[in-house]
Image 1 (cartoon, one colour):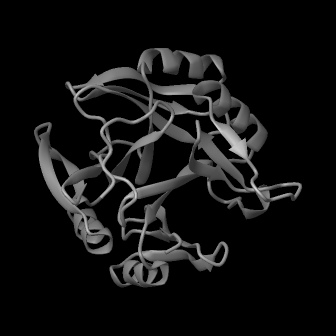
Image 2 (cartoon, one colour; image 1 turned 90 degrees about the horizontal axis):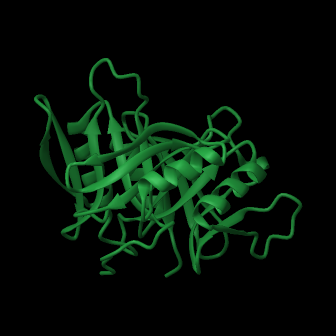
Length: 258
């Protein structure tokens, strides 16, 4: 079981579910991904759910408060050394700071940012909580795709902010899939324009590792979810699908090589 003790700056270090039905979400993701959940009081009427995999923190979640104008979604976080400085640089690079840097108890310091092309992400400066403590296991975050209408502007922004590189790999087409590298580690990608959902706003799509993409996709549907992209093969050994939970929150499932 690959454990994470510290996240390198620029890596994806946390994911957080904002949902309209916290109890239903716990049932769904527990059945689909094998998560366990632990609730912590958050305000007078709410709780923060810590989702665990093999006893390690894998994700967080909360119910969107009544009256708050926020769509249900999965949010992705990027590890940084200094949230205030990173948010300041993001603004200088053309981003919109949705929430300036603030402390989350003694756990860490974060900010919420919208990149210049419209996709939203958060940054996390760890204190007592590093973020996810597990990787490389079924049920864990394994990848994230940036769906954006302006790949060149997005690439320039994230390269300047986090030092990411964008590698087309073996794809020699005029509009290749770009693999995102943080240092020497592949962490995500940017699909080509031809594969972008023109009806969806710019966003980050998270991927969960599963043992059998077809079986997990079918199970998501059985549990009340919706299948947007049926299981597809990327090459001879990789397979993925795009689904939504019963509250309409979209994510992807990924089956790697054996």
